[in-house]
Amino acid sequence: MIELMSADDEAEKFLRDFTSSIKSNIRQSDMLVRWDKKVFLLAYLANTSGDVIAFSQKLLLVMRQEPFERLNTISMRMGATIQNDKEDITVIIKRAQMALEQSSNLQVTLL
Image (cartoon, rainbow, N blue to C red; front, side):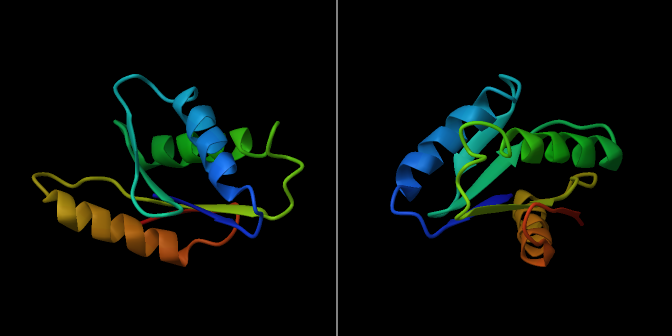
């Protein structure tokens, strides 16, 4: 899960730009959905927890580049998790939400 926090009046435009930037850095088979006002859920296939962290950190780097680098009022944090065998999707999402809550600005937390 990805959470964006903004004090900026142009937050909605920023969220559209954010969505475009993320979509251009994920595979066609990956899924990005707006989960809440400023929270997004990104589902993708990964082989290891190391792959999850590396991919999440790549996305954080993307968001520190143009056009977002000049927006001092924006913060972003990520919570990640890996699906265990035959685990229900609601359990996975709850764990991702817990990871997001434990994460701080520009950090990825994996649970």
